[in-house]
Length: 502
Image (cartoon, rainbow, N blue to C red; front, side, top):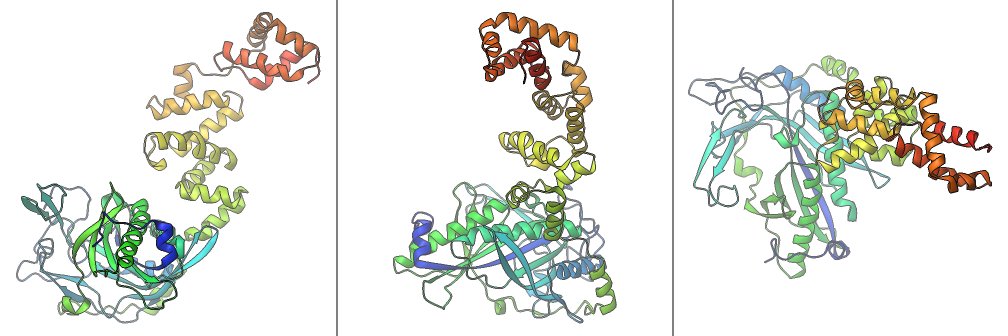
């Protein structure tokens, strides 16, 4: 029946059905070596250069667990308010796919390391508690590239190549419990959850969580149940969604697709699906296996994991300030509104503003430049704010130059433009472009005299009591000085020369 071609409008879908979400987020840990061997984990190395007999599963090789990966997983569990197991085991998850050298994955099944946690997120001014079912540790797979064909998928490809560098990298999977009651905010809740989860990982320092590089990926589960029903519908799982925007779009698209199928009397097939960035819709992947299909059994080559409770307590005591607490503290320190803080959060600007303040800028000025001129330039170039070629220290220097009177806002924008263009730091750009404010009173007075002579009618209006007309004269001074005059001082001098009280 309906796939990507037939969709129900979102508002209509939500009038008839209630969504239930489930999010499975995979986080590649930033350890120096792989989960069960000593191979490095550097991203972008030439294909199949970071492999050994263990991660290639050659006969006779045996795994050894990475202690740092276990520690990082426990810290993640603690940050997500989980219970940490005092004893658990790894398991073999059996299935054949070219990116699995062993034809099984070492993972955890019925004995995860962390269970029963939660993460609170704010959406539309409301706090939504997303309950965590489990946080478990496993190894990542290799990377398959399907060459030829129109879709980049295995179906229709001429051939496939596999890079095993990623195989064996420590991978943490964070699985939510079913998320009910989100109603029309379901897509926004999904995005907010993954956003907050990413920030928690960053604050812990356990991963670079770069979605574009695959170190954070999300599987999005969606099902619909008719309004008034308490029976969940059949779910689909959209695999490896790799941007925050795509998480939101995948939820919305599946709601629209599934609603159209159910409204026509069809049924939802439990399957994995692929998300398409160009359309915001999903297409069928493969039927979804159940746990028994993987034939889980305890990994015989690894000892059980039994974290010492005293060690776990020491890890808990050493946790850094978590993102939600940090935002509340900074909001109070900076004296900004809930709306302004939410805007900075959504723009990924909080770290940048904080670093700019640490470099000496007033909080209001740091926020003004990052959320104003720099955000505009980031949007124009489709660049993340943090990826702009300018540092918080350089932005702080611009604010210092403005505060000292050496620059006005117009000139400051030109300085930022020069820094972004690679012309050097703020002081270099000021020197090269000759952007200093006209501070010499004699030079400014001379410019004003010429503007008054050229605009006698406006000058006469000001003398006659129409002080508002001084704006045109100030504008003339700014034009004549090519934006380098101090507008405030120019206004004072104009009124003084015309014998008018400001």
